[in-house]
Length: 532
Ligand code: 5GP
Image (cartoon, rainbow, N blue to C red; front, side, top):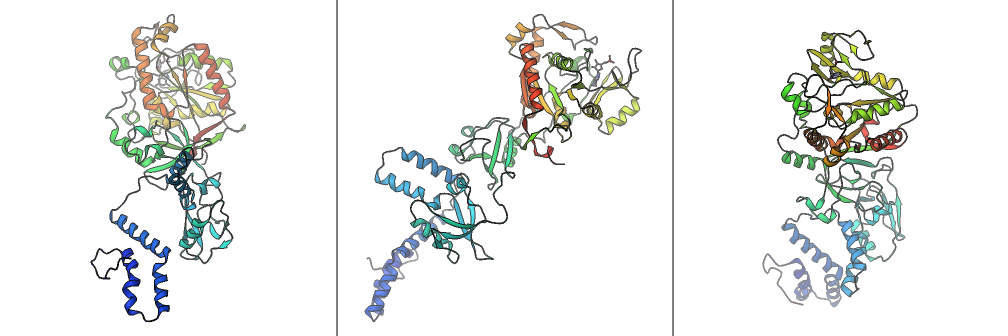
């Protein structure tokens, strides 16, 4: 053992000092008994280990280390699995043993300052403690492998754990307050964007990331970290959580990335009544030719405040005595949305209903109030607009036309399914507990299929004020596809179902099945729709 003098420089390691101490003290100790005692005490292996650890920690503390990985328990599991498949040499065996030690398997303990009890401080998601489901944050530890631990310090308990091999038994007094979410308390979110950890430069460990697609339902396993949450896919049998960017972090990044203008202004076109409720669609042509026809508020189109990240959701199943969910249909001009809606309506007029719009124009002789329109004065219309009574409204030939929220209510009050087709930017105003809207996007097929399937069909032209039906032009197809793309990229996170209207009969059947299921199946809806 090297003999070093106690004062040999400020950087003398504590460990080296300890090793040298018995020899240094020898001249000052008289009895052999005392000397043996000192040798034993300072030679104690565990003391050396502790001092060694202390020195290491001190060294790293100075370097200001930052954790590189949040899902350490999950990684340890993965690594152990990988190693099992390798040829076992002594190093691999040792690593496997280390990885199986309980201190690496996912829980930390602390002494409660007030009660002095030893309690579970943290559970690593996906680790052994977590997966067992038997240990929870706040639980009081009474015995480990039959050894009472009430009066032991956490370090002593770790020691007991470290020395145990194989199965470990704990005696635990469950905490009274539920720290870990119970079955009902589980938190689910709907992802409103696509995420691939391998494309994410910011994630601390790509392998620990969880990839997901817009519309996926994720279960939140931990939000302890403000930047990286832990989550898993709902219903996934694999218990291991993965990292996802937190809502706050994603919002911040999105705000920085967001291009100046994502949408082109939406304009309403006028169209001839097709026997049912008219629809008001997106058309660039209207912008040029019909300037004053319909102005939507700028704030409605450029919704910079709403960054689609995640939405907290809960399962919801409509009860028999409940009103039907409002069904909102969106899609570009000419996609066949009205045709589909009409087919659905006539399939069961008792079951499906549409809203009656308001207008300020004079009633024509063959019209009845409350059938084609609800006829009201300009003054009343303007007051109603001020009071936000309209879902949408527009001006046409010096008269107002609009769909009121009450007109939706009156369809639902008749215990009918209300079919509403609106521009997608109005959807967010309808997303309330009262309406629980289910949004269906009617999407055009490829341009080749449009040419084939619409060869003999006609589009109600929005280019002239007459609203006459004309054969589709190549330009109509291109415009339809383009506006569908804009709608999907801008509002896709609000769509519950996308139906491609390639063959009309096939699309109709899909729509019908969707409606039937909507009345009986369970859906994920925003949590705010479930509690008033
Ligand atoms: P008409 O006066 O010939 O019945 O309808 C003229 C036009 O008013 C329709 O072609 C349609 O574009 C528009 N219109 C009818 N109802 C509504 C509505 O509820 N909202 C909006 N914005 N326009 C409507």
